[in-house]
Length: 236
Image (cartoon, one colour):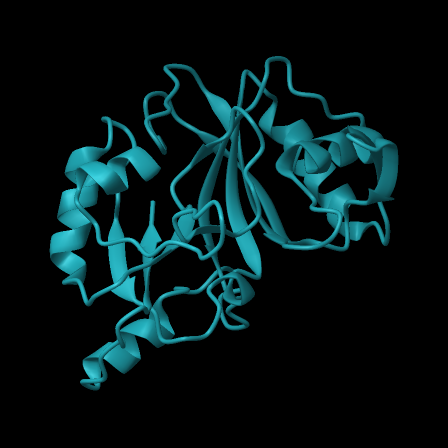
């Protein structure tokens, strides 16, 4: 990303001190290694005002295929990180049994706690994977449909859709899969294909993430401008 910013000639601001660094903040819960994503966010501090549409196009052209800048907006001042309260995920389970998946999902949702273990940098950690899961459903998919982030399957599979609140420790889709195995003995026959679909503030109406740029878009529509040294937010 830093190389793309240089190639796009973005007037990025630098930190002060003996070893200045570009003021780029990657925000939101980090996606696990090997997971696809359609919703990654960063903030870039700039030294002068930039047209968001032109900046988006320049950054997008400077990145390799498959890494796309979807939107750039002027920041309203509030921390973007504070708005990313939850993530929506899709988990594709090729060759999995839809009936067994549905039973496991209902058992997971009915449980008060689902204790799982994960090996972290600080050793084996045990935590509740149930509380952070705000929504979970399972459904079958037909051949060649329901593709996300360039992923697809030519065979029937189970698709899990889940909304997970950002918490400490972070509850990841693989933790939910571990929970499904513990409560109902459900284990996918092949490795899952996981995609983060969205991040944002929790929408109490839909139960999923809302647009994290909503506040910024409202303010810029009202004619307010970002001062010199302000930020732009980017959605990847």
